[in-house]
Image 1 (cartoon, helix red, strand yellow):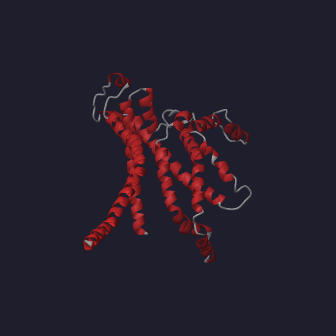
Image 2 (image 1 turned 30 degrees about the vertical axis):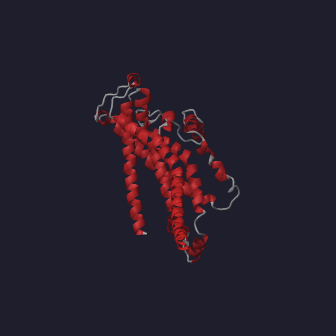
Image 3 (image 1 turned 90 degrees about the vertical axis):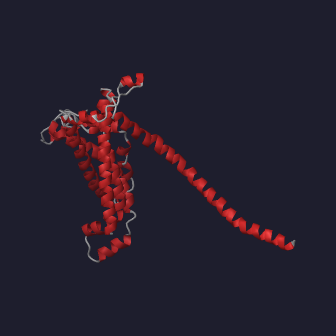
Length: 315
């Protein structure tokens, strides 16, 4: 009887750690799903569903009557064929790519220069980074409204230029200067964000490496290219991706500044999508323009992924 009791106890004791491990694993899985479920629900509701519905709208004749009848006849690729048959689409594509590429490059260069400047000690170096962040906190509509008044024919910028003998003009009303003006405003609005993030990234650069390189005779440019940029490259790459996606979808800034004019010189794909959906109420055509933007974003993501993988292999 004692032997049976010991055997039972031994068996129970042998099973207890296994049950404990299983209960601990189950609890860990429960906690994991508890954290993941809100993120999954948010992703499905605010990303996958709108994306899927946008794809559906782009293949149907979705108009205001659809909200009443609930009918949206399937048209297949007809919306995309109609969109690509419009000459303004290719003008908008060129403008969108121009604004995106030029803005991101200029923001990267100027943002890095400002970050390097604020990394130095000078009067105001502590509060200036916070001050320049204010323009980025303003809504795009407010920024565009202010700049529209500044760039007007009788605006303050022309008053200053005229006082020093430079010919003045209505910058936003001239097809030759409207697009560069939009790019300037886009850069001005996003530059504080770049400078702030890159400034925080520069604090992660090892000071010992910079000092050792300086003692070895490396100049400022050499230290920047060989030490600083490689160290903060992950931050730069993330900023580039975020800025490209944001700038590709630019609508409000262009809408308030020029509304796509003059003569469609500043029209973008995002603005065309807005026009079709919310001015002409052709939601199917608006969805087709949105899918074009999505395709460009996916193409950029593929190129970025390939380049990142190649860089990791080289390293």
